[in-house]
Amino acid sequence: MTANYIEPFRRHDSGAALPTLPHLTSMTWRHGLFVHWPISPDALRPRIPDPLTLETWEGDAWISVLPFVLVNVGVRGSPSTTRIAVPELNVRTYVRYRDDPGLFFFSIDVGNPLVAAAVGQTRLPVYYAQMHVSGSESGISFSSRRTNVNPATAGEPARESGWFSATYRPDGDVFRPEPDTLEYWLTERRRFYAPANGNTLTAEVSHEPWPLQPAEVTIHENTMFEADGLPVPTESAIAYYCDELPMTGSIPRRL
Image (tube, rainbow, N blue to C red; front, side, top):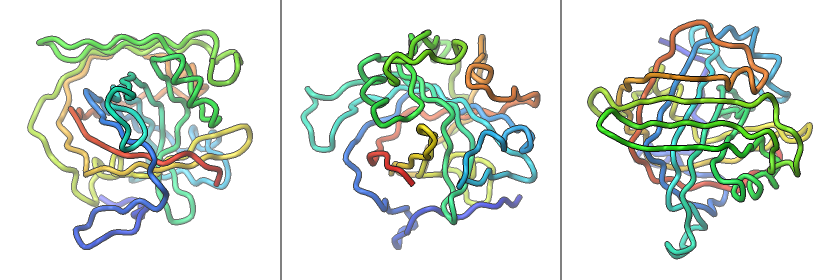
């Protein structure tokens, strides 16, 4: 398989990507799910702002929904007593800016109103959502309902409320995606972009390669595409699970 994909970062001898911006925050991803749908590039391209270019894999664009929990979130080096945990739900696609591939976020729903308001000061498309996450023998249950008002934009009404509810669990051995595979193309990106009042923001994260597992998923409710004004995929999804991964992040800035 081939794709129009270029590595985004400088690399050292081990092959790991090196960050290019100061990383002020650290956190740990837990109990996360990647759900990816192929979609027509023509249907999605109008939602991608200049100067970004929508990327495709073998002719298809891809749109993804990711529920997960971030724990130990805080400024790097800060004591554990100052750190927090927050569930999150992302809707994203795959883009390139010049020679740097990355992720483009249509929305970032956060299960804490104070965090949503604080992150929203960067003008990222952040919404507060009522979220519930629990674990049992059947797997992880994750539910999210976007509220009618978005504290991240000083009370601006959110789009039609987005709902997402799913039960998921790992269903196979852990693997690290290999270059030149779809799994690698969909996950191993370290830079993201997002709209912000007519501008485009960018930031980056740094972490080890994703330890993925095939996932067994039952989606009970998903209106996130309609809520974000996106075309609704009609093809079957592919899904992966990641149990835990520490990472660091930079502060968003304008392109």
